[in-house]
Length: 219
Image (cartoon, rainbow, N blue to C red):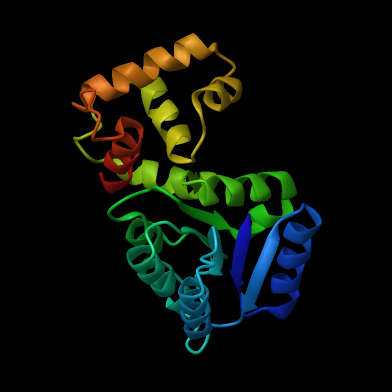
């Protein structure tokens, strides 16, 4: 897996680089601001060496507000094949929603505390690089709190909401079953009911799981 890291804290940037490198991944570049991130990815793309995933801080120089997430959104538009995982100190719902607008494929939003859980963090990076989704449970919980006020998900049972929330974190059916201590078959039934209640009919052109998560996040 080829990775570019954008983080203005040298200590954290070097730590992430060492962590991923020790696990056999190739950190092709490490930068400290959004402008350098965009330039670096552009240069790599021109050389036919587009990275699999970018790991970027939400807040970077010069203003330390939203430079990182703006760069991430831009990269997703310019290079649809690249995965983007952003790190944030706190849950910032606006940034999470903006990053997920349009498609949840190859995107992640994690709190920096999650980096300390090495296995979960690396799994999230790999999942995003492979086109999956990785959302921090705290982000999902906050979005779920908002969604309870909306009508679009009103038809779901509490358990179906719980399953959909875990789906939004990027978990597979098996992982959801393990988390809820139920059978895979039970989860599959809940997922089918979710699709049915959200009006997501089978279609070759649409990925119902992604559409369900987007409905959940945008509600």
